[in-house]
Image 1 (cartoon, rainbow, N blue to C red):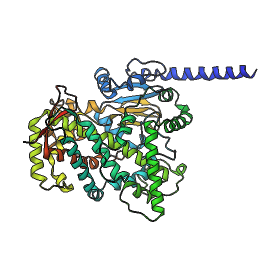
Image 2 (tube, one colour):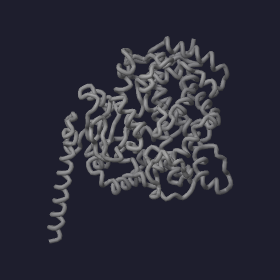
Image 3 (cartoon, rainbow, N blue to C red):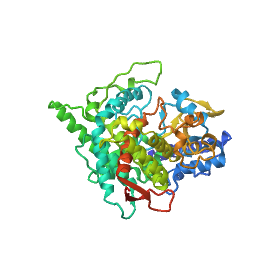
Image 4 (cartoon, helix red, strand yellow):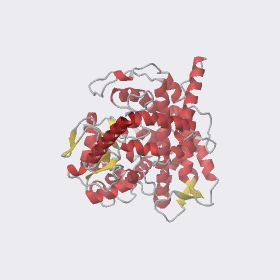
Length: 496
C-alpha cells in the first residue's frame, strides 16, 4: 500500500514537472520571439556548453538571423538575448535596481544568502557591503604599493619568454596566464617571490575553466533548479574529496586564510596582501538581515565574515586569471599581425618608460597602449557570459514582457563589432579610433570598462596588466607564428 502511494505521488510530481517544463519551453513563442531549435527539457544547454562552438560566437550568429531580440533556454531557465545598445545600457545602468543579480553558473553560483558568497554573486545590500571593502584595494595608492611586485613579475615574464628568441613559435597565452597568476597570488594570497612555472594555481584554474560542462550535476540543475540546495553541497563535497579543480582551489585558499589568522593571533599583522586587509575587517554578520539595494541609503557596514574572505580570494583568482591573461594574449596577437602598430607602440614605450621600473605615472602616459588594449578588447570582449542579469520582478524590456527570474544576456560580441556603432571598419583592428572616440563609440564601450553600479572598475586592474606588454616590447619583438587569424602562437624575435 505504501509503495503504491509513493508511486502515485512520484507519478503526480513527475507529471506536474513535465507539464510545467513543457509550458516553459513555449515561453518565447508566446511572446512572438524567435528561438533556435532545442531539446526538451534541456532547451539549448548543449549548444551553450559546446566547447567546439563558443556560445558567444553562436549568439552573434543567431542575432544576425533573428534580430536584436530573441530568446533561448538553458534547461528550464528562460534567457532573453539583447543586441541593442540603448536597451543594454538601460538594463545594466539605468534600471540597475530591477536587474541587480548576475546570471551565473547554474552549479557553482551560490545562493545570495549563503555564507560563502563573493562580490560577483552577491546582490542587494550585501553586494554594496562587499564592494565597499573590495574596491579600496584597487585605488591609486594600492596600485603604487603593489608596483614593485608587478614589475618583478614582469621581469620574470620577459626572462621566460626570452628563452625562445629565434626558436619555434610559442603559445604566449600560457606565459601570460603564468604572469597574471603570479601577480595575483602575490598581492592577494601573500605568496613570496615569483613562482612562474612553479605554481599549481595556473593548472588548477585552467582545469576549472576547461571543466566538462556536460557533467550530470550541472545538467540536472539546468532542468531542475529546485534541487540546488541538495545537489550543490554534494558536488562541492565531492570536488574536495576527489580533488577536482574547484575543490583544490578552495582548499588552497582555506589553508592560506587559516594560516594567516593563526599568524595574526600571534601578533604578526602586516596588511601586505588582500587576505590581511580582508581579515582586518572580519566580523560576524547576519546575512538574513541584509535587504535589497537602495541608492538612497548611503550606510554600509565595512565588515567581512571568514567565509566571505575565502570567497573574495576565490573570485579574485578566478576572474583576474582569465580576463587579464586573455587581454594580454589578444593584444600580443594583434601586435604580431600589425608590425607598424607594434613599432609605433614601442616608440611610445621608449619615449615614456625611460627607467628600468615602470611606474604608475609612466603607464598613465602610454596613451597609444591604452588605445591598443581597448581595441583588442573591443574585438575580443572578455567574460561575455557575465554581461547578463536576472529580472528582480515581472517587467518589460523594449516592449517585451518578461517574468521575475528571467535572465537577460547582452550580446556583447555583436555590439562591439557593430558597424552602426563603430563604422565601416568595425571588423578591423584600428587603435586610433580611441584617440578621439565618437559619442556612439563611448556609449558602446565594452561593459568591462563602464563605471557602473554593478561592475568593478576593471580599468584599474587592466592598467597594471599593461606592465607585461610594455616590459616585453622594451626587450623583444613578437611576430605571427601561424597563418591563422585566431591563434595566439607567436614567434619571439630579438629586438632590432
